[in-house]
Image (cartoon, rainbow, N blue to C red; front, side, top):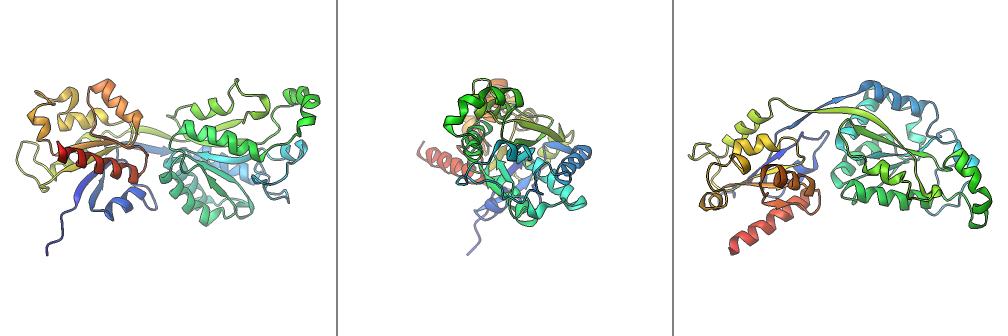
Length: 343
């Protein structure tokens, strides 16, 4: 019996290293994944060296004999907490994790094996990459937030989780110490947020928001560890990949069935639509018979990219993943196929 053909799926992202969760998942579930990088990432080695120096200088309090507080541990004194500048790190992109990992691979990380860090992360893909790094270099670290889904959800999870760890005053002490706290700053260590040059500020704004009580605010210090720009070769690379599966002039390509394109960010959307002649670039009626006969379908990783396609290009993607994960994309495709078969 012939082996069923795998469905081509073009992932508009750089393949993550050392492994990619999307590649692993789709390869094992009847798809033929291909990666077409949209963005070019350049690591900021100077900033990464500064992060390394923070570990070497004791900013994460690795020389303190106490283990890091846990959610069930008793509160520390204000003075004990002031000895530690940072209580954890935030990662919301795999590029930030990769830059951090590259720095460790090349330069090492002082005292890494003895530092009980909290590592906050925004989604399962980044969490998997971070777990590989943790298991190899930071065995005492804990990872939290893998199911957050987006930065806003993660910020609220951090507020609850981190504040539950660093409860440094008993209720009866709060009134008499309130004035001192306002003058001296927060009594809990800050969080170090490794970011790219293009990022939303929802996490710092939420954690340091003026609407929060002073004792609930969490200081966030951002370090830009990579810069991002759209690759000049993307549109041509994407056109070549699409041509492998379908002839752009109406003939037959390698693939006989459907082909999926998964879009991970607003970057590259215009080039993608131009190549596929969709949205503003569609000659004729994209909602008529031509649309029904279309063999290339578009899925977005979440609502931000979907809304960008809608609002700027007048294009409605076929699928918007409910969760930003391989499983979320696959479930969206499954539902789309099911509804299409009933139409």
